[in-house]
Amino acid sequence: MAAQSPPKPITLTQTAAILRNVVKVGFIAIILMMVGRVFFTSLIAYIKSLTPPKQLPPTVGFKQLPKLPFPVQPNVPKSYTLETVGGQLPSFGDRAKVFFMPTAQASLTAVDRAKKKASGLGYLFEPEIIDSRMYRWTLTSPLLATLQMDILTGTFTISTNWSAHPELLTKKQTISSTTLIERVKSTLQQANSLSADVSTGPARTKLVKTIGGQLTEADSLSDADFLEVDLYRKPVDEKYSSVTARGKQGPVHALVASDGTILEMIQNVYPVEYQIVETYPLLSPDLAWKTLSAGAGYVAQKGTSDTATIRTMSLAYFEPDEETPYYRPVYVFESKEGFVGMVDAIDPIWIQK
Image (cartoon, rainbow, N blue to C red):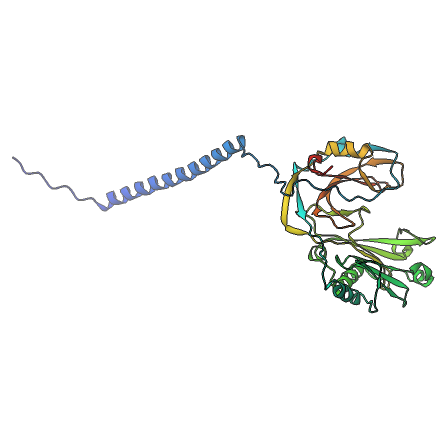
């Protein structure tokens, strides 16, 4: 039997060719893997889009909610018309957040805290006791001024007899609105009455003038006597602002003279526990509009016309004038003539009768 010849050794040229083929195959495999991954990822996303996961129902953890404490409304329009863009109402989804608002508790230190707050506002004398919760402080200089405070909640109002001082009207607005906003905030800080959500929230200013002792909006800086300053909470989810029973007026509202003197102030901010939150189903915008047009909504500002021609609808959070257990949404309807109306945005099945 003839002996087999030994295999021929692989040459460098053959080795290089094999390596090139291996690299080509590996490169093609990597490309196929990448393309395949993108394809299958897209396919899975497409399948999921055809069968989206079922959304859980609203949590409604607070159970039924009390009715909103809307004040009595003396003046309402005689009729309503809807003239939004395209005659359509916006959509706000099927649910909204409701936050817990703790109520103030009686405390042995409440009077001392109230006196310290009043001192921060410049009221150093002993107060007059109106009842178990309401105290009143008085100043006689430079203006006759009154501070009235709920010693449990710390909410307060300041009023002066500015209308009896015509010299205030000769001093036209020269200080910037930004400076006067900071003046209001610093006044609240001195009294430890500037909450974090108001400190970081938006502010609005309006030039006003006095006619016959009544305030009305001024057309220009040269025509203005005073400046109104409104402070609001930071919007919920960075898009839902707050409203009060007076419409666009903020829970902190001040009338400020050109020299920075605060002539009037309302601080009506109650604490909100943003970490204690539930979701509730919303009343549909169509039903909200029917509620308003049927005269069952709340009118915060009647405006200048007996017919409320609604141009815009929005969702906002209502700032109550009194303690209430929840910070919750309302639908807000507005016209160009100054009308502002509201309807509770929560589905009525979750509102106490």
